[in-house]
Length: 296
Image (cartoon, rainbow, N blue to C red; front, side, top):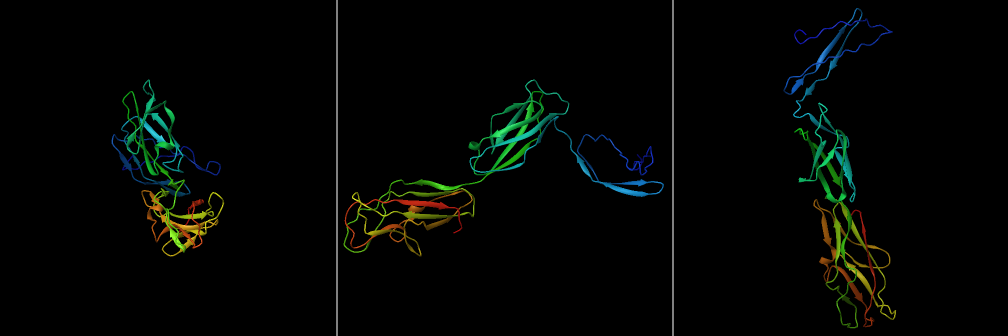
């Protein structure tokens, strides 16, 4: 090599029957990281001249003879309740490992987990659903052997989608005992209503709460002369067997739990409107709540 230029003569001429030539250059890098710039190669023949460009590259110095390579994806997307398996390769440059093989060290979201052993070659690591949180999880992996080798680090991001569902919902609730006065009047719910909507899907997702109801009757089957209603800021909705949207909400970054019933009062929320002809007694009915992933 002269002045950073390497010249070689092909042993055979290029012809139609021998149209290609393969030139291999082997070199030894220095003991430190080395950056090799792009270069231009020229071919000069008796009847043709051409050139080719070789891309630049970087040679990194190995800090250990033990190397980990990730075979599965570096970003994994899961639904709630799912786990995953991370796969990779572990190798030692000189082929020698300790008598106990290679030890894999996992850390999930900053918490060190139990190590596992594998022989040189492929490895797999199971991440159970119960150890993952909603949103982004970070799994870091590195390996060691009994000869003192420490590998490079691998990092995997595991994203778990959030969910929309009911939290605590009262199975049995009541209305405040009320004396009838012979005219239309509102009966308000007692303080034993719990209606939680739990949304962990991340900021900006919307939900709708719908309600339907059966007629209220006493033990003899007599129907209460009245209507179960849900009052919002703009409507006073009658609840029937057909589901009606009564509330909406939007999730936040860290998950949102909304107790819909906590905001009920004389002007907002569920109430029983009885007519003047209502007869005193104890009446029972059923309210069905439906939660939908839908725009507001």
